[in-house]
Image 1 (cartoon, one colour):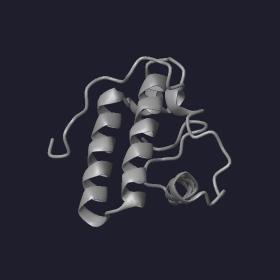
Image 2: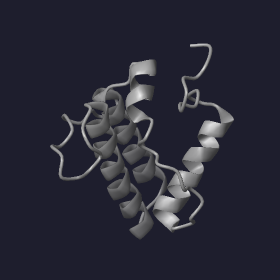
Image 3: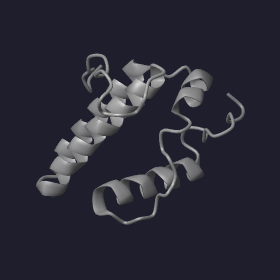
Image 4: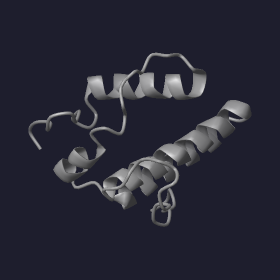
Length: 114
């Protein structure tokens, strides 16, 4: 894909990576660097890049495997827990629902070795 749809950073773009870093610094360390709605563009980005719940499940599996391999302790537990919540919210948004935790759970998870 040659360009990014409105509201979607091209995957792998520097701005995209910086935004993700700010997001996770804020989620895990309360850094206050990320002030946007991370889920606002999820449905339009999903349509533009053909993302589905299986992609979110794969991301979560890779995230969890990476955290398990490199980190331990309270912040590692927090990183896994928060990532699971983020993945569930994104999956609900991809299905056209609310990001709220009161929505139905996302589809089954995929393993990291797939």
